[in-house]
Image 1 (spheres, rainbow, N blue to C red):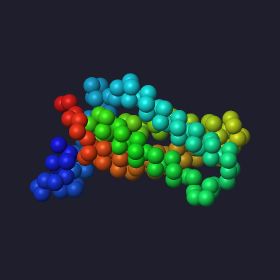
Image 2: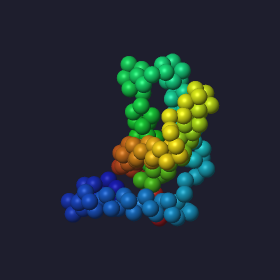
Image 3: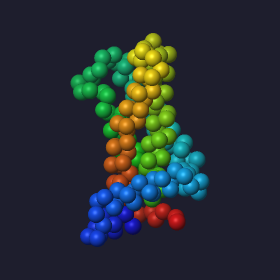
Image 4: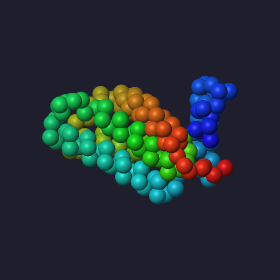
Length: 160
């Protein structure tokens, strides 16, 4: 259906964006559309891969660079994760759910930074909260890109 809407000349990009946001809201608020346990488990494992990557990057090179900046790499991992989630579920919201779970797991890196490297780069609770919100905002765009691509290429029809 998404593929048909993209090619429909009567549907504008703003209408399509509105449909995607409604699908996201329905996917989050309806219990029957919540992700399966298997999808949540795999998403959590994907989040652990991000944590392991971040720890390895800190161990091998404690600075900000490993030839290229290591900061955007975990954010870019949200594109294939959302793509996979959207293809598996057949829904835009499925890709977003994968990224929500993955983000929750990978956000534990703040704790691991403190425990493993004695580094807590925040001065107070408010700066910590704002930093987490900024990190989440950076993940939204790659998650949406992956979800759109996953739904557009999916052969699975989402149940109604």
